[in-house]
Image 1 (cartoon, rainbow, N blue to C red):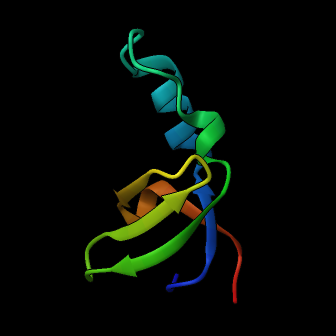
Image 2: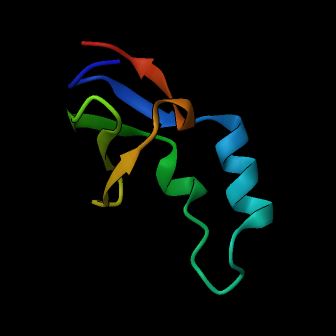
Length: 68
């Protein structure tokens, strides 16, 4: 994975947030279907998600949809 790649949450990440997340907090799985990697620090990838959120993601929580 590299800057500019389109990514989404892995299926495991979606399931985890759907069934183990806080019921009061908004379900973000729909917003995590597509995002773009904008930076990385060697440990995390920083992803700008479709709803405008910028979040640090571990490599095992996202998968590539499309590369540059």
